[in-house]
Structures are given as structure tokens and as C-alpha cells.
Image (cartoon, rainbow, N blue to C red):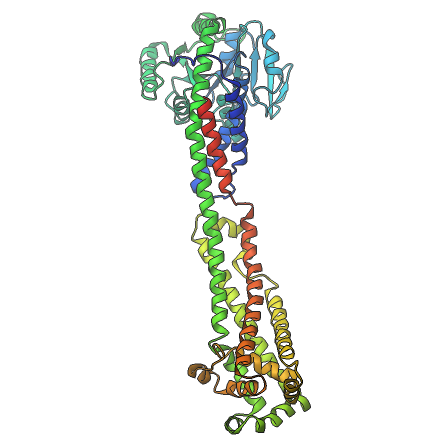
Length: 573
């Protein structure tokens, strides 16, 4: 056993309260993102939480409770036979079918029952008593024994390398709940990787360890024991006692003969009878567990920060993609592209081409009758133009939304966390199913906004009469066209070229009715209202990604509180 001197005095109540605070912060410090870089930290968090619940807090709260020695080891090492032999009666089932021990057995002196009857240690396991029966998962069987001295309890654990994953996990949990690891191995398996990984953890955490080398050929005893001691020295466990049990025939009761188990029984009895020796062992393991909190919580803080950064990057990708989409729509609303193709063709059908443009130069008044008659007397021809403009705007907004969704999916797939999130939410790789309907409704509503602008500007009698000559719908259509073809109210050559000069007619008419300054303000307002509706649509699309990441978000406060709790334990320790 490592000869680490015990700390002076009993643990303070402040240390216990600070450890409890840390325990609660560790429980809250979940790692929600399924990413390889934090898999180890997630396992470490679970192990840390288990050790705090199963050992550190119970031991701090009951420093004078009996020493708990967990008997652990590899499959077929003879743990249960060893426990039965120490007690000189069968308390733990043995057999050739593996795994044999599937539910742990805790053996205690009858006078120590009060320490183990409740959930002081291993609170996640229910207590059962009586004779062995069918395995009951999630339980620990309590067995009183007069043979075991008061002050010491033995816990026979499942195999650390069991073929049953639940047994392996339980074995590890039980070892972390121990004041002393009584590690059982054999001459054939003492160098196996799995036991040594756990022994390395014990060394790193300062856990008290004793080794039982079981089933050793007496002729090879010296060589095998010497090699094992050398391996222990390399792992910093050179002070751990090593007990050897030769390969012998069991007696009629299925127990190791008394002479071959006497040294181990004597050592356990002396440990149980010497309060100072028990305190040294308890202090060594407890102090080691407390010291390990610094490193283990530090690793958890680092993992939280990693996941925090990952969520931030994922959210950033969504914001950037839809910000770009808004800019693209904004550019499309002012660079003349909405006046190409179908809109241009429908406009030219509606007002004519060359003849009308010539009349614009001669004066708007000579154009008014033709345009006004078209809207007042024959409104049907304007419908295709309205629809073409509606479809053009809707197509632009939809295309940029689809591009944004595709961009987010591509960027998420290039990250560590994104692929799993997209696999769970494949709908995030594309726009919402009802987006087209939302966009078409928004564009129709915007066209209504434009008509409201016209009505508001035409409130005085003179202007209202001019509007009446063309019709509100006609003036509204002109305003939509002009809004998509000028910057600051002034047509520029490239835009005129793109639109084939058609918006010049609309602008001349509007200026004749409202004046050039009013046209600038009206067109700016029309564009702003449309952009606001687009921003609302895109915000709702982006919100899908924020909602998907909502449960994954780790706050700065959460990271800070965990670090502060660890620091408080360190200060109290």
C-alpha cells in the first residue's frame, strides 16, 4: 500500500459542502454534441459523477465508516472463490459459466450493517438480502459475516473484462467506490491490458491498491511475482502489497486451503483491527480522489468549451448564409435583374415598345390616355404583368433561401458536429416545405403595401385626380417597376439598358404626378418594405437551425460556475 501520510485532522464541513456544489455543477455540465473530440470527456464526466456519488461524498460525510475493499479482477481470476475462502464459507456464487458474479455482493460485520443498509454508498444500487437467487440487475446483495472483522467490508465485483458491457461498467463503478482495491489476477493473465489500464488510473488518483496473484505454479512463483512487482513499480505502485496464492486443489467446501490463504486473511484482519492503519488507507484514497478533481474537472471544462465553440460555429454558419441571402435579394432588387425576361416581355406587351417611348419624350400627357385607358377600361391585360412581377420577386427570394439552406448544410457537413445533427434533422439540408407558400403570400402582401403608399401620397385633391387618370393599380405597378430599377431615385445607364428603357415611362409618369423627390422616397420605402418582409422570412428559416442547436447551447456561466466550483474545492482542501 502506498505510504502516503494522512492529512491532519478530519475533513471540514466546508470541504464537504464545496464538493457537493461541484457535484451538482458536474451533473449540469452535460456534453450534448455527439462529437469524437469530447467522447472521452463524456465518459470521464460520467465516471467523475459516479465517484463523487459513490465514494467522495459518502466518505467525506462518514469518515469513520468501515473501510470498503472492492475485490476486482479479470474473468476467471477466482475472485469469488477468494472471498469465500477468506470468510471460510460460501457467500458469493462460483462456477465455470462466465460471468459468474453479475450482481455485486457486499460482505460486512453484523455490527456494521447500519453503514451499508441505506444509500450512503452506491446510491444507484438497491439493497437486497438473503440467499443468492437469480441475478437482479441494479442491486447489491448485503451479506453479514461474523468471520469478517468489524471496520472492514468486502465487495465482490463483476469481471472488469466481462463479455457483458453492463457488468464491465458496474465493475468500474464499484472500483471507484472503494477505499482499497483488492485486485485479483492470475499467473496467466497478470499482464493483460484491461487490468493495467485500471491500475494506471488507480496510481494517477492515489488509490490504495493491494494485489492478489492467484493460481500460481509454485515452481514459477518467484519469477512471476518478481515480474509483477517490477510492473507495479513502473506504474508507481511499488508500495502496494502483493499476496500470492498457489495453484492448489480446493477443499470439499470449494475453498482454498487455510494455509494458502492465511497471509491475506491475516493482513485483512490486522487492517480491520488497526484504526490508524484503516485511516491511512482511507486518507490516501480520499486525498488522491480529491486531488484528481483538479485534472478531471479541468478536462470537463475544456470539453465544454470545445462544444461551446462548435455550437457557436454552427450558428455562425447559419447566420452568415442567410445574411448573404438577404444581401443577394437586396442587390437583385436594385440591379435591374427583376425587369428582365418575363417582366420585360409582359411590360412591352402592355404599353407597346417604340411608339410609346417616343411619346414619353414629347410629354407624359400624350401617354396618359393610352395607359389610363388600359388600366381603367381593360384591366385584364395588367394581370399578366402583375403576375410576372410577383413571380420574379418570389423566384429571387426562393432561390436565395434555397442557396442559403444548401450552404448551411455544406458547412455543417464539414464540421465535427454537423453531420450527426443533419442526420437527426435531414430537413435542415433544405428550405422549409411551406417556404414557397410563405414567400408568395409575402410578395402579395408587399404589393398591397405599395398600393397603400400610392394612396397615402395621393391624398390631396390634385394628386388624387392625376392618379385617377391612370388608376391606383396602374400607378402601383409603375412604382414597383421603378423600385427595382433605380438607385436613390435616379435611373442609371446600365439599369436602363437592362430594362430595355421600359422603366423610363413609369418614372416619367410618377414624376409628373408626385415630383421627383417624392418618387425617390416612395421607391425607397417600397424596397424597404419588401426587404423587411424578406428578412422576416429568412429569420424564420434561420430559426430552424437555432432551435436545433438550442438544446446544445452551453452558456459562459455554466463553464464559469464549474471552474469556480473546482477552485472552491481546491481552496477548501
